[in-house]
Length: 263
Image 1: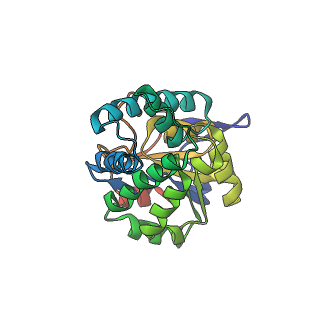
Image 2 (image 1 turned 135 degrees about the vertical axis):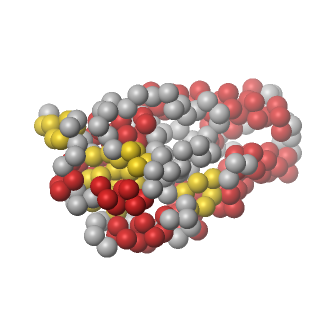
């Protein structure tokens, strides 16, 4: 079996009897977004700006926003420090002639409008609530998600009735660090009160979830039931062309397969 390293100590992937808690990613693991979610959110954002007298045009703003977002996201992935949409919007507007600072209240209202779409266009997978209800009977559960605007993430989680299943909910927009940076995983370990090697972490993203969990000393399982799901980031921000650093990481296509992995 493969080895995971934590604080200089190696442990085998495959020793499921050690599992004392389970962590989950959010998007494309527990919930999914409708194909038009990103377009709908961006439409609400530009509509809010237009009502505030800032009307750069949807298509022009979309391209500027995408370019700005990719720059900030790449920097965040490199440093591990989370970014925020307010900076993307401010820079995008600057590219097309509007000099508006990231903390301008008009940008704040646009952000609220943008994320309001997620409440309408995001849904749990059909089996999510049953899965969490079953697992919670045996293990404490934690949630660790990359999401730039933490208040919106918590609203989505509450709206979809997920919060009661989790002992801890950690959002990168609040912790300040994006997966695969180890800081979020370390917070998850501390909050669940067990050792990293005793936490099974379920996610879909090869780098953020799987390699991130491996490097932090957790036991990762890759779920592929959400494969092809819509990422709520601009095109180009997420790459599937990442090699998982341990070929022995289990892969599951249904939650029943996940359950069969557990002791």
